[in-house]
Image (cartoon, rainbow, N blue to C red):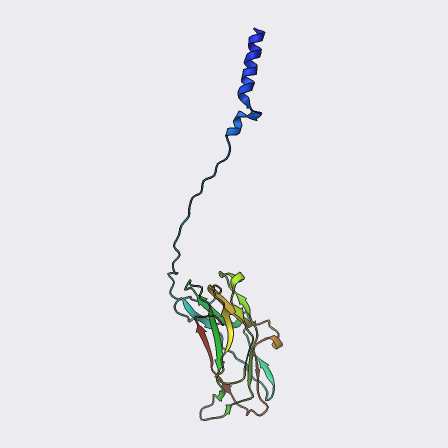
Length: 221
């Protein structure tokens, strides 16, 4: 009886170990590859709505637009001196661009300015030359955009009426979504904000100028 039991034990051991490997080694992990497919289409939203930053009302329409851009108010500046734009508490100055086309074509914003003219009825005084508007290189913000592929900002000095300069641009495959170029906020130092120089030969009075911001559907080359 002992001999039979010994042989049975040896046979069982042979089943558990084959060529030095456990018989349970056959239960190895396997892999399968499946697919996830989707077609990305344009957003159903027609207009961007209110801007992400408090820079002004959202007035843009469509999937490729300047959604908001700030007015500049300088208050009083003495003849021959430099003034900084005023910013209300918790507000900012800047421009927001929405590019929801989904093409990655890139884009560019240019700004040009007219001469200053009097806002007083019947007064034809105009500051034709000597004025200078400086817009600093702003900070790009976005709540849902890809900041790793964000558009670029440029500092701008406008001193000739009608001459456009690049202020905000996105290279190919960048700037998709909504982005704001923040020029300054209520905590920005005067020397770092939007600044206006008044020439020493200007006449006293109230003046205004128009700024034209143009969004083109191609990046700067």
